[in-house]
Length: 149
Image (cartoon, rainbow, N blue to C red):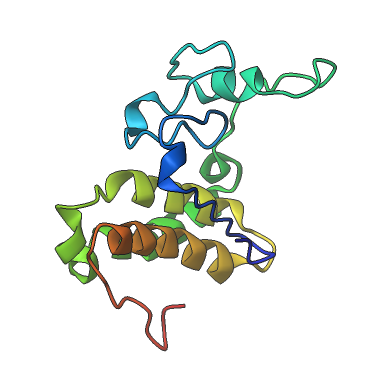
């Protein structure tokens, strides 16, 4: 499912668990081996991982990942403040089920990158991703308010 903006959900039948590979992982329930290259090597570097899945060898390899908070330093404090909702009491019921740290980090990264009128869209999408993971873990969090998303 694609919202034609910022969110794409891929849902596979359970019969495919552990039988797929690629940029979305292998669907075995473990995030520890999701960065598996086309040659079946588990790596920690996202550049090595992403470059291994290029479809055309003529495509140039990505050389580095620049933090958008470094590129747009004036966005960083806003992003950190907004994204702190993920680590706040609002989501406390979920913290023991779904680690908030990677979602907070992704939220800050994405929110720093949105600098052309999409502030709320990028921030809200990032928080919604954590809320969806909480929901998948059986914890429903009502986090949207008239002032937030």
